[in-house]
Length: 257
Image (cartoon, rainbow, N blue to C red; front, top):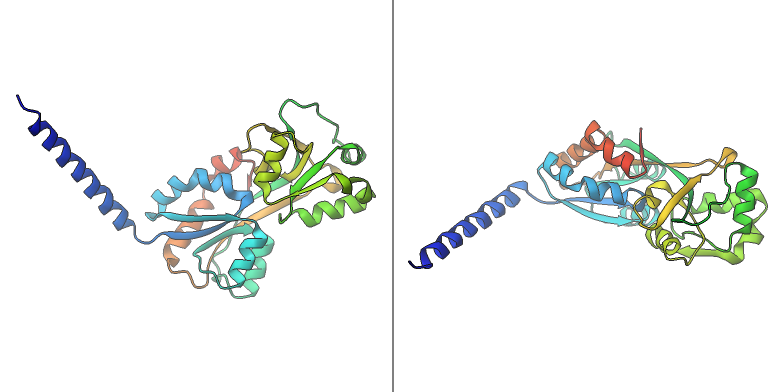
């Protein structure tokens, strides 16, 4: 008995699989370019396979801070869908960068405090307790270009502790590095969105900002006014705004709207 017929059969089967797979990818058409805020990164990465099946197109995902995404769009970078803060989308609508009537507000995420998993948990249940905890912290990190940076620094000023905390502030390039620095023990506290704390191993949510300092950020999906894949862009937004995306959003620290 020779192995050649078996080998030939396997080769033919493999070739057939490659042909079918290539044909299916080709049938999907051009990728849909999606510019995504870091606050939505974990959820969109998890949802990518479902999204691609729903719209029969592959997604070309690019992640960055909302501020960076907005600057790229304003500078003329091509895209099909943007998923960034609602405030930024509103600005882009006024600038004519977003196709009229395509935007859908998806989710919100609370701004809160993250600590290293297993570390002692300081009190932040009241505004006064939060003030003490921030003032006494050895170090505090948050994203340098994050959508929440302005609010965080105004909060320090409102509390009257801006000068006290300044020596311990560690600005990070992105929410991932900020939160990961807490997991590594390089910073004591991170102030960022729940959706940016949940995916990072070794960090846990201490809690939301209490009382008068409570704050959340909302995210909206919208299609480009010059989208090359306009129908697929609208289909993607409809999927993300629908019920099938809800469980993933909730698991990633986002509350559907």
